[in-house]
Image 1 (tube, rainbow, N blue to C red):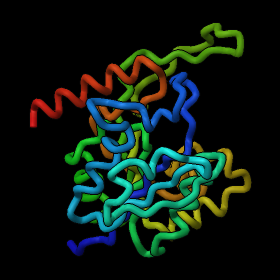
Image 2 (tube, rainbow, N blue to C red):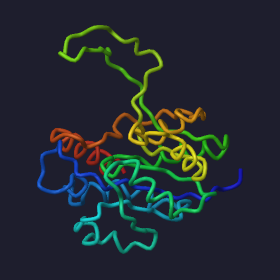
Image 3 (cartoon, helix red, strand yellow):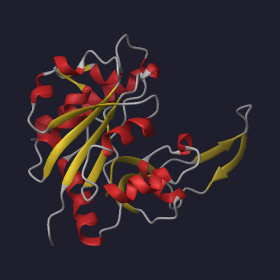
Image 4 (cartoon, one colour):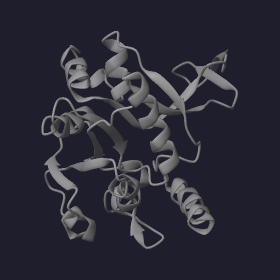
Length: 230
């Protein structure tokens, strides 16, 4: 199999208000490093990933203070008000023929093995793919008043994770075809709305996104286990 030109994109322009911190959540500390440094590390250390493009907010004053900002693989772009705007800013500075791995800055527990599984799948099939974990709990649907109206069959239901990997020119075209870009919740949703196939690669369920305060403790636990295991 021929190697692909691989570029990682880290969406890091969000404010993370639900964590209720004084700084954006990606700059909160976990085991002596910021969340975003943990999220970036597997991509910076991957020998086949040539560049890591970080999309940060216009008024971000934290990233450039990190030592990782000087890493030779790192390139910064100015993000937008929404995730899709920030991802687009990064995609527009990347070669159209490259394959991009779009990852959330607030997912610090991503493993190298999952990244390799994703790359292997896309390299073999040349079809976009995402990491995802199976839904294990009973799923309920509610009305606007918070009352249960149905139990949803969890068969073939997945939690979408990141990174999500696509050929850059295909992803750019898919996003441009959506009349209302704000409907795009992740890169796979843009592909879906454009009628393009996306493969699910089962990933680790500990690849959590730090969204609420309690997630910080869980992420610290997972990272500690990985460090001790290594």
